[in-house]
Structure formats: structure tokens, C-alpha cells
Length: 358
Image 1 (cartoon, rainbow, N blue to C red):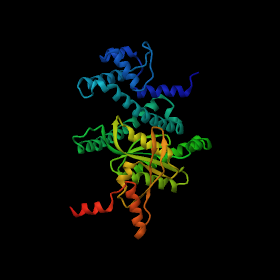
Image 2: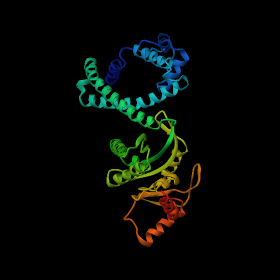
Image 3: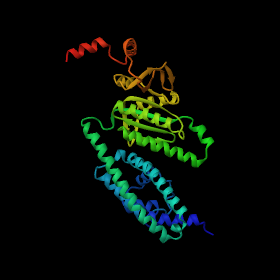
Image 4: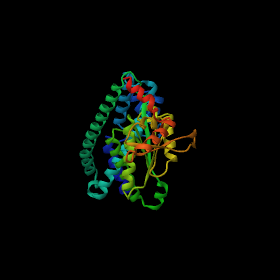
């Protein structure tokens, strides 16, 4: 007897793939006019499991997709040297989106079993939902294209892939211990609440989410003040929410390599290391970012003793927090002197001379 869930899976598959599986991988390559080895590389890069050459798993839609991908390369829009990298990035991002959407669809059918009782019902449901999802996805994609294009053209002449940014990590403290204390439903709620809060705060302060890594968010911001506000606001809001664990953060400023939606370089590594040594509720920043924020009266920077972490010997971070009431008199002078000694601000006299020379 066939498992009802297996029958439903087969119904969904036929609807979503636009037809029955009827081709082998070699037949798809032949019909699309794409060399065998190249079609194999693209299939793997998309994140799909390797199939035997004689296994019938492909549809007419697969043939058309392979043909379209080949035309993009042939037209010169995608350089052959990065074809596999582009395909891999596309597969990774869309696979996560698809997983969430299938979970949503399955939850809907689970709550209303009559929706999945037969193939006609399933087809009707999917036909109703897919166009709506596709419209939303297309809108979001175009908005992100417009936003990124604006930043790219604003930096005309610069390499779009390499630029100066502030990179930050914010992660939940005690996450591993938490997973042993609560059930899956509660864990899902905590993660969803953290992701929602992180996404809202980062967008609110003009940053960009690079990726969520379980209990951690990686973000970038163009301006030091925006990055500071993101880290401080996230720390404050999680502290005020008793249902969320405390967070800690690490940030660094400098040149990064942005590639296929991710970021790389020593600045990213440095921000990650700072996060690993930060205490709960603490934000650590590197010397470069501390220098950029030193003149901002809204913040207070306190140098920490040197630490050694993987890849960095005697790393000396600064703890970032909101400024208390501005000091005055002797205390103001001593704070200024301390900042000058640490190299975070310019000495007062040269600054006065520079202002008089304007």
C-alpha cells in the first residue's frame, strides 16, 4: 500500500516540475545542445544530487532551463569562467527560499487535509499560490537590483566587488545550551524572533543582511555610525526582551571582497574574532572603526586589554556603548587626553590650528 504522504509528494512534484520525469541527464544535455560534462557541472553547482546517466528524472522544463543558461553564456552576459560560481550562488540562495515555501505549503495542507486529497486539489492550490509567490519574489528582486545598482553607480570608477565597509557579527549568547533546554517549537520561535528583529534593525539603520548563520547575523554598513546604531540597537532590544538570549557583537572596518552575495577578507575574519571574545551585552570594535567613531559624541569607546585570538596576536579592541551624560571640566580634559594617548583622536592643539587655517 502506498504511503499517503508519498502520493502527495508525487502529486506536488508533477505540478511543480511542469510535467512528468521523462529524460535522462544525457538526453537533457543533447536536447539543450550543451556538452555532457558542462551539464554535469551545472547540475552539481545548483546543489542537486548526482544522478546516474540512465536515471529518468528530468522534464521538459529542465531542457528549457539548460538551454536558457547556455544562451546567457553564449550571449556574453555571463563570463564562462564564472558560470559555475554564478550557478552555485543561485542554487544556494533559491534552495533556502524553496525550503521555507514548501514548509509553508505543507503546514497549510496539514491544517486543511482536504486541500491535498487528490491531484486536482493540489494543482488548484499550487496554481493559486505560485503566481502570487512569483510576483512577490520578482518585486523584491527588482527592488534589490535597484538598490544595489544605485550603490554601484554612486561608486563609479571603483571596483564593485572590493570596497570599504563596516562588517559586523551579532550572535546569541548561550545558544548551544539553549538548544538542550527547550523543544524544537520553542527554538523555532526564538530563532524567528531574533531573525525578525535583526532584519528590521539592520534595514532601519541602512545596513544590509549578508546572511543569517543559525544564532548569528552577519551584516555590512557603509557608514560607521549606521553600523554602531545597528549593534547598539540590537543589543538593547534583545536585552529588553526576556524571551530572547543576550547577544554580543564584533565589528571591524576596512576593505572587503563582496562575491555572489557573501563577503570575504581579513576585515570579516577580524569582526568574527572580536565577536568570539566579546562578553554578553558587549560590542567590540577594531582600532580602525574606533577611530571613525571617536569624534561621535553619541558614543563612548573604552579600550580593552590586548587579547590573542586565532590569526591575531595582541589584538586590542575597544568596547562601544552609548555615551553617558557628557563629562565636563577636569573629567572632560582627562577623557580627551586618554583618547589622544590611545591614538583615537587628534590632539587638541593641532586640531585648533587646522580649524584656524580653514
